[in-house]
Length: 101
Image 1 (cartoon, rainbow, N blue to C red):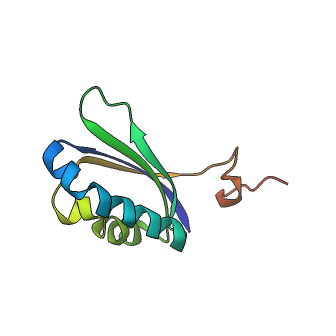
Image 2: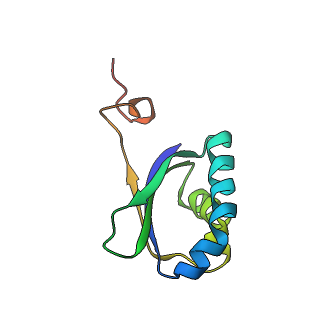
C-alpha cells in the first residue's frame, strides 16, 4: 500500500458550497474504510484548496478513490497534484518503507 499526497483547488465557489456536504460525507466514508489518512483545507490566497493523504495500492487505485469524490464527479477539482510519499518519521511511520525499530 502506498501513501499519496494529493492537493487540489476548488475555483468554483458556488459549486463548492453546493457540494460541500456530500464531499464531507465522502471524506468520512474514506476515513472509515481506511483509504483517507488525513485531509484539510490549505491556505491558498483566495482560492479554496485542500490536501489529502490517501492510502491506495497504486496510482490507478488512487484515481478510482478520487473519482468518487462528489467534487470530482461534478468537475469541481482543478490543478490536482499527486505525489507518492514515504513517511519515514512521525505518526505515519508504520506506513513507511523504513518502519521505526
